[in-house]
Image (cartoon, rainbow, N blue to C red; front, side, top):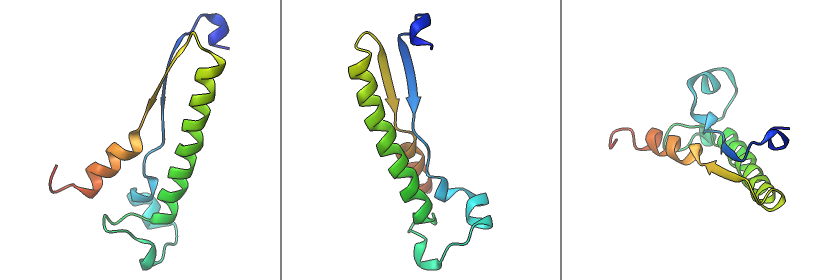
Length: 90
């Protein structure tokens, strides 16, 4: 693996709020009650958040397993959701 070849710095970013993507909203069936105040499909964003939680837990385990490496976890979801939900403000 990369670590065995000397890699010690790793950048791991989570997934964004794909329930906010136009092609998801257009192509996948979502009830009106499943759309949040930002216009995003909550079931898909909940799935993304679940994935991100498990990814973050994995990064924590990697840090323990490889103490000489640096794992930077980047929260893309929060930044993108903030931009989408606060579009007029930003």
